[in-house]
Image 1 (cartoon, one colour):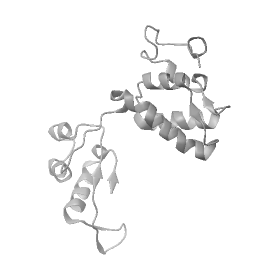
Image 2 (cartoon, one colour):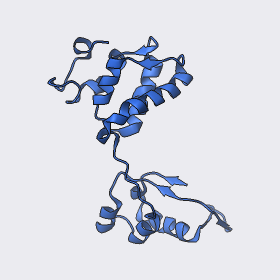
Image 3 (cartoon, rainbow, N blue to C red):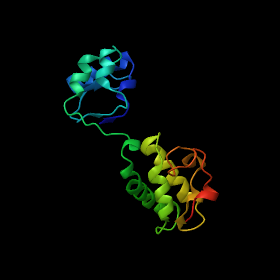
Image 4 (spheres, rainbow, N blue to C red):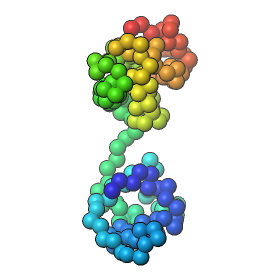
Amino acid sequence: MFLDEIADLSPVLQAKFLRFVQEQSFERVGGNDLLQIDARIITASNRDLLAEVSAHHFREDLFYRLNVIALNVPSLRERSEDIVPLARRLLSAAAIRNHPPQLQFSPTTETVMASYRCSGNVRELRNVVERDAVLSPTEVITPECLPDTLFHTPAIWPGSSPAVSKKSNVNT
């Protein structure tokens, strides 16, 4: 079972979830039967759960029940070298659904994407790629196809101003 943003659980739901984790059982809503389950539980959060425990926003006992193996996955903006390979993989999947399978990014488009600081992480990148796959008029996605938000960040082109014009500064 995967639960995303576990830190967002209300205190009432944290208590119920702790009971589920400890007893590996639950009752269906409106039911009276106790159902046993054998499940591996994986949770994720974009917040530091230990800090949430210290601030009394997250139950300490639930934290220690869940914190068996902790993996820290840096945000996509902290590992820019992963943007292009991930974007290619997302494009491959999107192309199968929306466009000819040979859809690809131009080298300049990949340079722009690699320089973008994805504040929305993988979800944002997935949406950009999906949009490009649907709207691209050709099989090669050029920077002109990218959303304007990719050109309003400071790190796109060395020495450029934050509001880079994609028509005048980008060559495919």
